[in-house]
Image 1 (cartoon, rainbow, N blue to C red):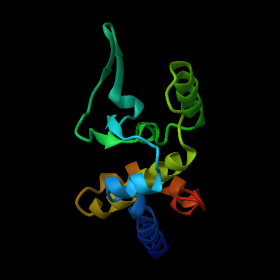
Image 2 (cartoon, rainbow, N blue to C red):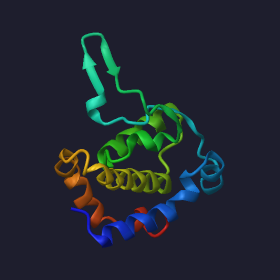
Image 3 (tube, one colour):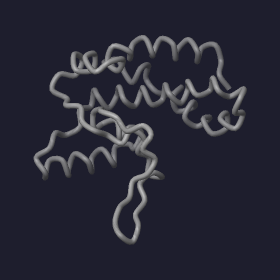
Image 4 (cartoon, rainbow, N blue to C red):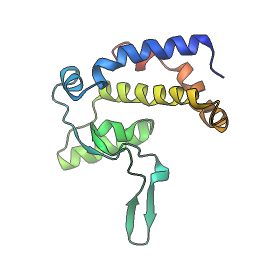
Length: 146
């Protein structure tokens, strides 16, 4: 599935994104005022289960410090709007669009990087195909300002 152009783009995107995500100091320099806090780190809907006793969260191996935007990566505009509406009511910071672009680009880069494991895990190719195809349609490194 991966072609030389994909590999070249992935490498160039990593170089562009690294200053913002390579260290806490780097992130804080690129995004002053965006506070890091404990985040789930891997928050797709499948890891959030509504049970008889309330909402339960699972799959905590990627829990870390990060921007709230990380846990909303790839959820799309509807979830982002819902978060912003709730944050506004609670007096919390609304999402930073530049941070969202970067975390979405990093998430897509991670999906593409997983293709390196395809020789050992061939099932990854089909599982990652939609993400790679979406990545190919996205602006480089999340956009011109990323």
